[in-house]
Image 1 (cartoon, helix red, strand yellow):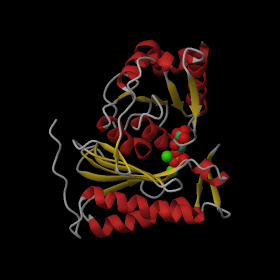
Image 2: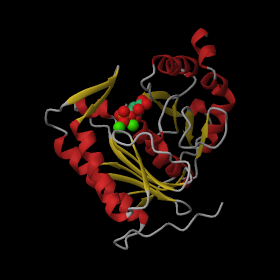
Image 3: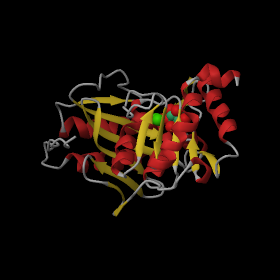
Length: 278
Ligand code: IPD
Ligand code: CA
Ligand code: CA
């Protein structure tokens, strides 16, 4: 597919510049509050939102309203129902890894992606705490700060380090644990990191060989889908189709590990009742 031409912002900046500026503004706000006390509201067991999530999201939306007033915004805390399947839509997760963030665990990030008809075309995952900016534009490669990154070339699951997360649905989280039990010890090791978005960015950069999850939302993966593809990796949903922002269960990372994972474990990941009874 030919990469679409991306629209310039009102200020004349490119879309990736605006995406980076948004991620930096949101990430800086979150970082400034990281070590302080937080106002925490519960959205479900284990699923929380802090004042920093909402403020960072509003800060990002204010930039987008000025730069791209005609574009839609789909964002976790204040605009979660926007239809991103048509037209230009910005997809935002102001803090991915909020549970980590609220506990002072230094593994969280800010995600900003621009999608055209539901396909990510520019994306940034910004780890403000470590000063790491993972970014990609469709057709232009994937980068971490100034360096081009590449997904893992390892051959198979047996030689891989695989990242996972449990999400906020008990049955689907239990399915992930069943998947871990099925894979381990036929793998180098498994990491449960607490930020799906940073886990996918790590898979794009070859730090993890693969990242897999059963229950994500568009703002968790919009930037990561593009990062992994532009890093030469593979990203699919649990039916094996190319990963889309509306997919819930997926695997993304180095092509060979991805293909081996799908061949060996796709039926496990795709069949939650099967996993739970196994
Ligand atoms: C969550 C994190 C977590 C993953 C959940 C996500 P949030 O995002 O990425 O690692 O397991 O599925 O929803 O709530 O911290 O933005
Ligand atoms: Ca998230
Ligand atoms: Ca979030």
